[in-house]
Length: 106
Image: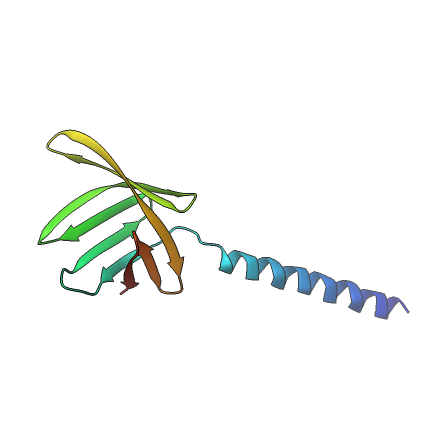
């Protein structure tokens, strides 16, 4: 009887562990790496920790970002002036959508 109880407890612990790992994997989390758009104008966002570099037309701008309530907020300095811009944000699989434009992870 004790062996059966032990097996039930071990099975329950294993199922809880699988559930926790599944929920962690499904969490949005912060993006990392480079995401590139496809279209007439190629743009990219490269995320590393709290930093993001936006590239378009051969120009790079680096700043910090936060993601909250479906919004990507990027703060960067341009000509000595700090700017913060908010975009709609969604992550699906290997893609992120910024203001409706799809960026695919490279």
